[in-house]
Image 1 (spheres, helix red, strand yellow):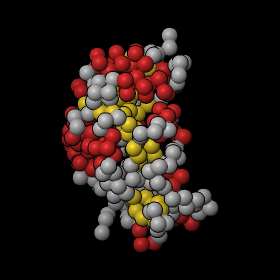
Image 2: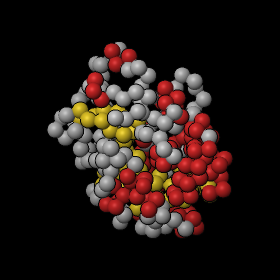
Image 3: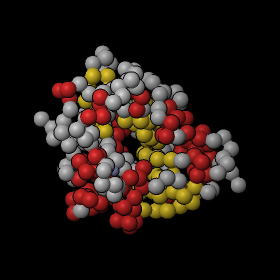
Image 4: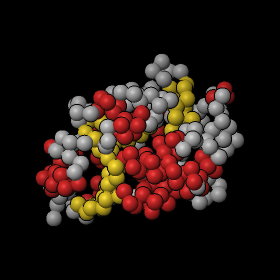
Length: 274
Ligand SMILES: [Zn+2]
């Protein structure tokens, strides 16, 4: 049976997360067939006065780094790859009014971007977008060198995160926990509004985050909505547990591929910044 807006509403009330800010990482196909598609899910949340926060990353805006913006231990190896293929560089200029988004972000972020009152953050590569009464508070502080301001804000507001048919390797909040545990975030590059190349903060490899699933189990509620399996976590609890787990065992975030420059450098503390 297809999931309806009121089914979503009932789940949100049962979970006690109606009226709250909720960060969603999602796979629409996890629901099977759904009448109205992504709009049904989004409206189900908005009808219960949730504020939705979603990642709307946009790698198309990335550019290659000038020589003076290449920190070491930056998940880039020795930057020798730069000489290989510079032809992809597009030099687009990002704006929060843009609806450009990576295809992997999925149908729900794409649907939210098209809504009239959505707010999108000021980050060319890893913006977040929000809709609902807390949208301004969540989005307003995002900046090229404050990529996770929306995640810090949702923690301050006592919000929640829902993994909707996706695994813990999609839980971007663990990148914030890495930063809280003392790691520097990686630097990548994009154009600012005037066309100058600037550094921007981004998260690294997240494939190892699956390993945090066990330590986060005590604060994870599991619920099935139609065919979609949701993991629902209180943001403050999951951040605190993740931060401690990373401090105690930095390798817990490593994806296991010994050639992964990003994981190897993250475990050492991330880029060396001037
Ligand atoms: Zn990795």
